[in-house]
Length: 270
Image (cartoon, rainbow, N blue to C red; front, side, top):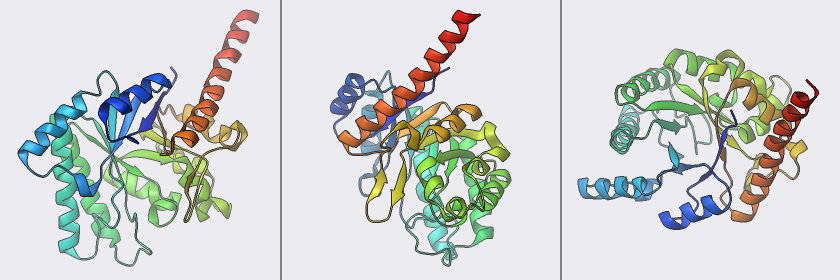
């Protein structure tokens, strides 16, 4: 089956987001929360859930790109505060019918010094179980630096916590572990290919610039093939600028249509 090609919530208005998705052939929405606009009161939560339901019939998955909110902070009070935020979001998603939530470790930190490995692992394990109890799969995303940028440490976090994987192919391309050829991008997924539930797709991330769209299919074809190989069915085009997003969409369509044409040709020969 073809993966679902989805966009981020790049527009605030639900109807504008739905219209853009429909006009451009997107099949779902990957909704990133903003700490500044998280619903706080029961009334705000109810309104947010009603807004999410307006996105039907699109499937929606969720993402917490929160800077310096870490489950494994070496200050127990800050770790507890982060845990409370994530648990509140999990409860909210459970009420809204959400099934997947991607989170980060170390996002926005300049080093891993403020983090505790043991606290990170233990708190992540507990959060994954809390998500399971509420019908929400917690997925850990690899970053371009830090523990999750190192495939050997990423593997330990996934295996010991039972988290799912959100493979960010731009972060994987940019990280030192891969650019130094110590590891390959495949090393992020080969130990747990059956746990790759989401992918964030763009070419690379440049400090001060952000996510850079691919210029041609050759920029990302090998990484897309890897996603197909592990059976990842949720492809988020993580570009928040419409022109770059649509450029990436055309390249993804070229890749997926090429696969269809090849299979039809083989079928015709047989």
